[in-house]
Length: 63
Image (cartoon, rainbow, N blue to C red; front, top):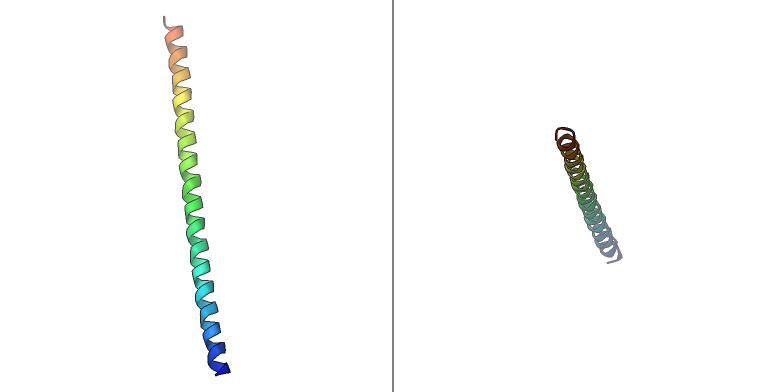
């Protein structure tokens, strides 16, 4: 009986560890995706601001 309990405990621990690893991998992927979205948004906003400044400069120079 004790041997069966040990085997069951080992199986539960193995399942728990695999689920824990899978959850960690999922959160890591989500974190990378969030960082990528933030970088894309920052670059887009920078391009828009820079484009607006260049447009204002060109309209001021050619008036």
